[in-house]
Image (cartoon, rainbow, N blue to C red; front, side, top):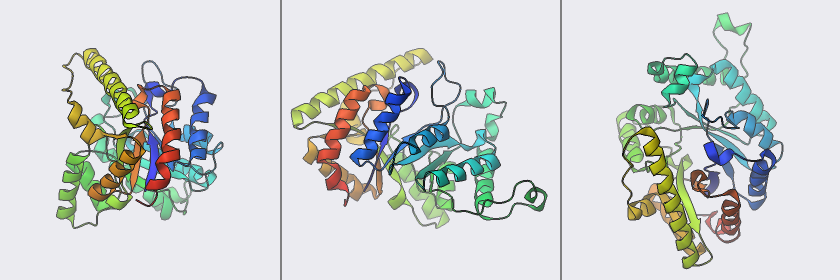
Length: 320
């Protein structure tokens, strides 16, 4: 099973740039397979890495084997011809270590700032996807050939993120593996995706798709329980603050539901068993693990958990 890292986004990216890069240099040495970064623009306060491709380029120059993915590139925000060219260059520079997760985006403010009609997000997304595939593999239309010849080279693996029937139906028709979400949990997505497969007659891609889970572990059960308590307390505080800022009621908090649907936790043997069970029940071939609670756990603590996981769990789940 492929084991990737996730969760370093927004506030979790703040701090010294060299220390941030060193975290993933260590992940490379520890044997993790990949790390995924999100694309967010025009944040308040500004975040240091709005461009996932620029961040990936910096990390590729400092690592040897770890893959780097975008989760996601918001296609309606980009010119597809230039984006296809940049992706092809970065994939070449990395020696084929790039993964591209794509989506249409859900933040209307970003569209407004860029002068893009958010109502056209789906249309722009699908048109951009088709253009990128064409420029990677086929000649452009005659009026474009002189100024923008085809790259005619393999593109990196593509993944689809999203929860709506339209988006999951698009993934089914195009044979795109899924980047399944952590919140809300993936159960609803998988049900919608199964319906899309039944309606289209398409072959499923779950074996190449990726689940996401928080990871809380210790060398013994007591240590793992302490990690779980810290994660859930900090996540609830963050959720309450976010709800207050938006003027809405906080989402219901059910400890047992969160543990069963969003968290892998326990001592090493328990974590191995839970990952094996997920592989069997969900049928996915990759797992994105969140060691930092999406930014509520400090990097030093997250790195300590990553090291323990790499030492005690990672070798055992390779063949799961």
